[in-house]
Length: 358
Image (cartoon, one colour):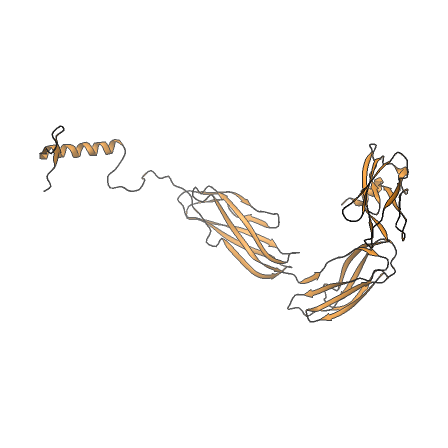
């Protein structure tokens, strides 16, 4: 049996043994103190813990593998409540509007589950895909959960490039471009012909081991007339659904000197506006701008050399009205091959605005 002692103050080293009744009194006082502070001896957990929901998704990431981009991916994410209070899913967030979601039930009782159905259309997509879905709930420990939908969309038909932009071409330019057509690996279809909408271009089908479906070569046929051109390339295949492929083409044929933009387009207005032109040499030759003559005298002109062997021409105090339609800004230079060039003005009419509307 253990003996208890009490130390007397003021007399170091002096101790007295405690009696049995004294020891019992001390124990009773300690127990009363624990009870007064709500402490129960021997308990290690908080007896006052409130019930709470617990959001669980057994498979938060779904990989759909490699799928052709003519299909929709549909997947059900199972959402479970492993807590002991009702689970409330307050919001389902998407980083974009590329997916359709349907939550079967936003209130899940303890021990129950619901389903979040995701529909992901792959139309027009190509390459690796990674889409996030964020759930916001009343789970106190994990109020935010991220679900992932991953995989790769494979184009049933891959065309590169999908349009041909020729940029600025000189009148004597002989330039060639290539269009590669490739069907999905398990589809044995081929390019069988090609047609250009303009005599300015010649096109032919070229076989190549790297492009088993087909390769089309397009080249310019000089001399080319000056100005903006738009056309198309029609590619014919033996595929029952993609038997005709249309590739848009655009560009501009320039002379020895040219401007960007090639015309000044104005919207009708009562207040004066300003516009700027850049003047360049297609041969990258040095030249000087000697004079800029606007169509009417009240238009102010300021000419400044640029860092790219050209000139910036600023036109100020232009009052847009229909009287300017068809008139030109005339630029005179010391460049022997082309001493003068004209830049037309065009004021948009109300019907032009209607034509540009969606």
